[in-house]
Amino acid sequence: MERTTSRSKIVCCRDLGPTAMALLTEHGNLEVVVWTEDRRCDRGWILENIPGATGLVVSTTEIVNRELVDTAGPNLRVVSTTSIGYEHIDLEVIAARKIQVGYTPDIPTEAVADSAIMLALMATRAAGQSYSLVKNNGWPTLSRSPFALCGPQLSTTPFSPTRTIGFLGFGRIAHAVLTRLAAFGITHCIYTPRPGAAVQTARDAQLKDKHNLQEIASVDLSTLAGRSDVLFILTPGGSATHHLVNSAFLRQMKPTSVLVNNGRGSVVDSIALAQALSEGWIWGAGLDVVEEEGAPGGVTSAHPLVSEPRCVVLPHLGSVALETREEMAWLTARNVLAGVLGEELPVALDYSAIV
Ligand SMILES: O=CC(=O)O
Image (cartoon, rainbow, N blue to C red; front, side):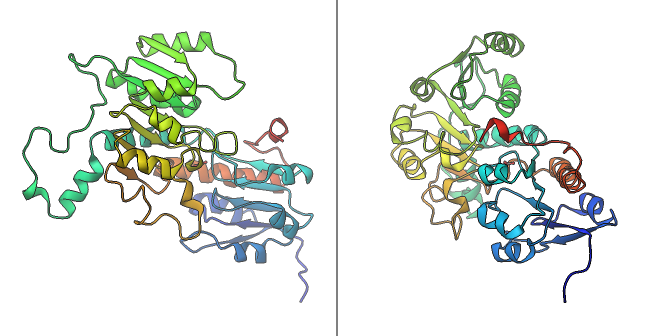
């Protein structure tokens, strides 16, 4: 039977939770179709439900490309992603159809910064190895050597009074990480800016003052690799950053250094990092993202980084904190609703500057 309803349809590839979903379901004049299973949304399900939709809610695991937009048809006005990143959306296709994109760029800042500090501490202090040891009844067998399970210390000490922190990507989240690191007595901050970004002398002078740093400097990639005690990767993915951290980069790092990736997995060559860890080019790594995470089958215990004792791998949980996720869900719902109603989105991606 043909559909006779004139209600706009919103397809949600994520259940945004009771509060945010109520904004859509209680509107009264919308058909809301939701993927309710607690696993990644099935591509076949999206393609089956998207025809005729006006709004689409996705997260970073749903690829929004020509196939999907064409299958949706001419009604599609807005894609609302519950994420900071938008690499999963083909912006050229979206721009050609004048579809609006809503996203949640600012909300996860603090949660991701918390997670970066957690990973830095876990990786420096061998938390992954120690936790496995206890879980596997190894505590009684632990050597009481003063150096058993010892790792480099994040905070400065009177005998080791300097620490250099590197940032690959120096945006909002990096600044929030730096704020937290001030409490560890960090003394030097180096970073590589986005290609083409102007050096921000006044901002850097302010940060230096605020965090009591001896140095803050924009540097090239080799210097970043060679000087960082802890290197935080907080840059978007895509072709501009693909495998910036490769064998050549890792070989320049210090054997006591630690790498933390809360940006995108594609920035780091996994095979090169596994080799760097197993051969001791660097001390350890804390990863919230891995380049293979989107691959069929995902990342398993056989992955060379998961099996590396000095590597802590988490399944992309940077923004997974209750308060943050609720706020992201709320904004995602407001964005899709506004788009469907033909109103200005609360937080729209200005893709005119990108495509
Ligand atoms: O990676 C997470 C996001 O883009 O929000």
